Amino acid sequence: MASDAVRPGPKDSTSIDHENTASISSTLKTGRSLVLLQLLTRVLTFVLNQSLVRLASPEVFGTAAIQFDLIYTTILFLSREGIRNALLRSTKNIALARLPLKLGFAVATTAVGVYLYSSNRVTTSQEGFYSALGLYVGAALVELWVEPMYIQTIRSGRMGVRVQAEGGMAIVKAVVTFLSLVLAPKKALLGFALGQFSGAVWLAGRYIWGFGLSLDR
Image (cartoon, rainbow, N blue to C red; front, side):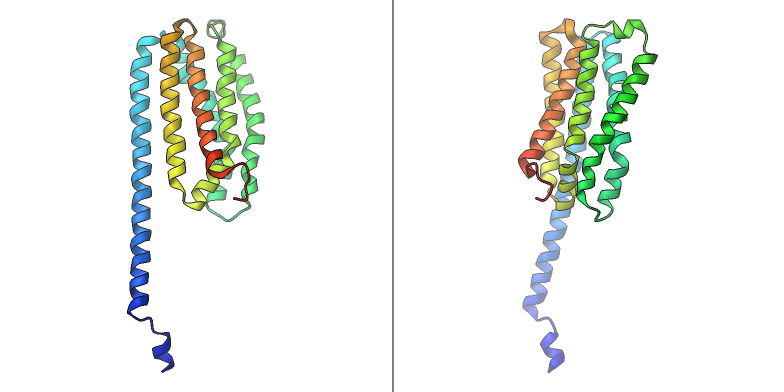
């Protein structure tokens, strides 16, 4: 009798099957969303580069798409990757996700200092060079500022927020950059920077809309 009492009946089995089906469906949906996000990013990047090659001079395109982008990715990688991986693989206090922003200031200062020291006069004399570089650095710091919300997104499984944030960032960056180069071709370098910064602002705005500014949500 006791054995029969704890044995799951037909209703319990059906409930478990429904839960498993829902879990598999959610996983597949998340996988499709991430694949579409990567595809969207790749396509937009390709289209953007093909369009901008025709709108910007080789000097400007090289400075923005190679040098500034390297500064941008260097700041992000050195400031957050180790901490991000540690937080996603464990249950450590999410407040640690604030640390990348603090590291970002130090990394940015070092990276920009080395870059400016090694750059030639032809590069630094381009129209809007310093303003553009500042916007790229600012964009990286904005991303680091919302790193706690990114961690929240992954931990809570709200992948729709991530897709909208990162997908929207790619779209905003592409549109703003293209329009800036069309409307102000003489300030092309600044146009690239405005696109990058606008994309980061979109990313931050979407995460804040989804989670607010509190790490406890």
